[in-house]
Length: 160
Image 1 (cartoon, rainbow, N blue to C red):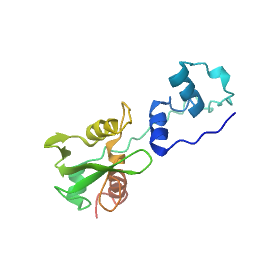
Image 2: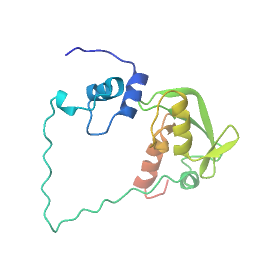
Image 3: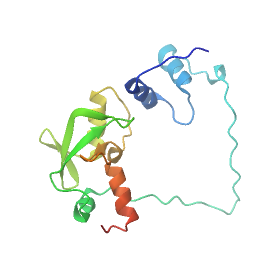
Image 4: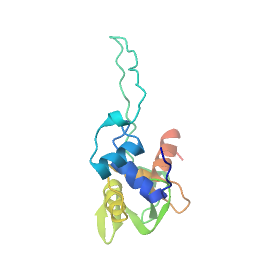
């Protein structure tokens, strides 16, 4: 097997095209470039299924969705504050900024949800994904993601 180096942007694109928890980068490239979907060409170790008792049912407790008005109310963000778009590797994408307006962001005088705008702008720079978690891509001027601020809000019980 040969080794190649690719830049972060290309790696992010490759990640966006991969089948999560199934494909390795090699398999993703084979599928995209050669139309090859055979998994048998690359050795994979079997993943054992965890044993679960019949009567034990786990309920996934979902974390509440990020709520910009609550972050504003807590003082972690401000109305009209500028947020900056970051890519999947945590690199700031220059020229893509939006302002907070209520529970949305304003970009080019239009209102968007954080996820909707992140998805649209990431596509403009070469990333493509049908599922983008906006709070993970929008950061304040201090370099803290909205996701991080939301976690801080939740950890303090919504009090600052």
